[in-house]
Length: 261
Image (spheres, helix red, strand yellow):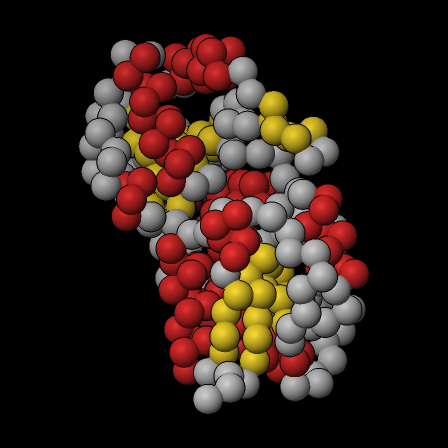
């Protein structure tokens, strides 16, 4: 039986939770998912189908491909928000608010933020965190970013970055509660605390985002994490694409925000 829709997954770094949401919708609606890019990372020039689900990142060739494809396309997550595509994204401000509430309920009085990048998603999570702390009279230290990006290229000086992070951690009062952009940053903070001779969680409390079992399960001590509903976000992205493929026309800057759980 011919499937109703042929949908390209223009995704080169898949997350299990995002894939679960897409696959669940595809099964419910008899889609054929074209998954080559998950394995090759190569843009399938000349491909034709009914729609595209993408996590754009900053690869120019991928951005050019989806913009020139001329078929309904939905971006999942806020990465590369400058590209004019309908998209679904998490409520990053709310994620920051939940993180602050978690720490306040546990009586912490010193707080820090550990970013992944200086991008929009990082800034929105920090905004929610700071705005929730402020009415209680608390501020927030900012640790060095985990990664730097120039255009489409990532720059990396691991030794220098770790030295800067260790210095930043040693300047914090103890105990300090650190809100991290995601679980990967949280795991890196835990490792850096060892280099700084700081105890987790006695001196430094760490909170991640995504509740990724693969990352949290490898942490040296149990890692608490805000459950960002990536599966629900991907499912809603597929549902939006289905509407676009059926002729629905969203506003030029259509954004659907999905709440964390």
